[in-house]
Image (cartoon, rainbow, N blue to C red; front, side, top):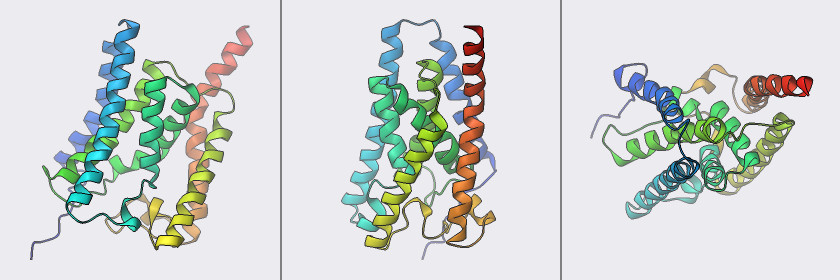
Length: 234
């Protein structure tokens, strides 16, 4: 029997993932800062296609390998919803979708980069799809907000809180129906994550709500301040 794989947290491999995730959107946005509108839009659509194709490849792998199951593979993780919303925001340049994707990714999906839930070593397909998917989400939302200027607007905090309750309700419904753990709403990840710092189920669900509200607030604060300054100058 093969020994179980443990991702090398905070070692060179993980640090490279973190560095790339931070630098890629900065470099891309600066490179295209003064580029033509068509070029910027084509890049946005390219990122959207990569995100969707990456998700489809993972789904195809699960099906072809005989691993696909209702309790594991429905698009009911928050990262799945973020993929679709991010891709739609990039493709159609919708501000409301971009702000929602930005908050979900930078407050939620980002934890998949800080503490990756990876169970196979590089270059396994699931390793690659995880890295491309999560790194691509950060690249996508940063490009949408700062590259395409689809920045969060007044009321964004309330909108994302409401959307998050809808996600939790849908995920919990399917969790009860299929005995699944979408969104890690029924139990903590076995591979370890920041959830280990919280209390046991179900109390950590309330803590997640609080952490989410605070995280969204902190993310919204710079945009709120900028909007406030613009209003005062009018």
